[in-house]
Amino acid sequence: MDSGMIGKIQKAKRYAEEPERIRFEQFRLTFQGTNSQHTVSYDQGVWQCTCNFFAARGICSHTMAIERVLGVMLPVAATASEASPSWT
Ligand SMILES: [Zn+2]
Image 1 (cartoon, rainbow, N blue to C red):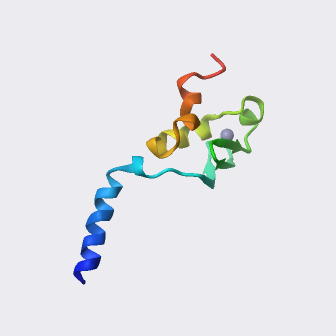
Image 2: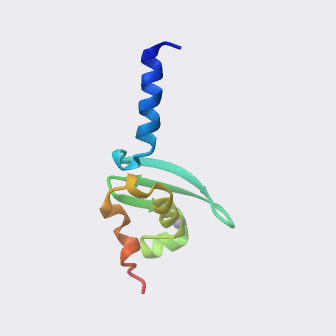
């Protein structure tokens, strides 16, 4: 392997330890829930989920789980719902 590639791999390892460098803008995924499968999407801070709970509340266990998995890679505004849930 050439030295250029070795340097890039080392840099990638350092970057991977600093996820705050990464900000998702939009994505779409399939979430396998306990009873059924849901489609979750995220676009510029706006969540969508196909489950019934999300339709009623605008937030659900699926979007909250993804927030926890992605952590600092989501803008603060996208995770604010967890800090002050509207249903309490
Ligand atoms: Zn959901």
